[in-house]
Length: 237
Image (cartoon, rainbow, N blue to C red; front, side, top):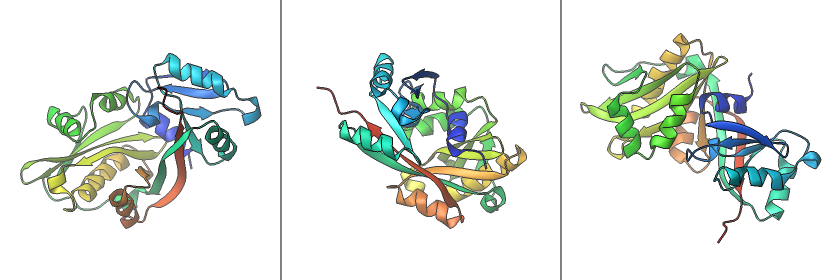
């Protein structure tokens, strides 16, 4: 199975990548931690954390590091430097067939580029222009899934495929239409599209604190195949 972190970088790419101090530094341009973090590429004893911090600051970013399995020593070093731990994350995975199912007529449809109504709904639900720009620059097969309830746009999601794996990002449902099976129906539609695009597996990322998303993943029989969290530098007065 392809490395989960490679799927993230391909389907949710940073604006630019550079290397410093044995780390891969991502320029996120305001798009959130996933595209603004550093990951360790060399043995820790060969790494230069101050060089990575300087590279972050040269990009106008607060230094932050993704801590993956195997990065426990880095985690401890950053903690000793006063770095705050936040956003523990799970990466869920299942065969694509497990995610497919019936979708009621005119409930969800996959399309690209996103309709303006989809972009407006993302913005309304805190997936703003900086995060939408990430989707636009991904150079892989991708789609927007628009969900509808009561004859109006009610949910939206982005799915992209890399090396046989479909990754779900930016799933958002308007508060009024939550707990009405819309997210499940949108995933069914996204999985249908992804299977046609050659995907054999379907994956999604959830924060540990997001009970609704974790419950949704479990309801499909998805399994956690990777976990990570972040460390960010102390605030500078």
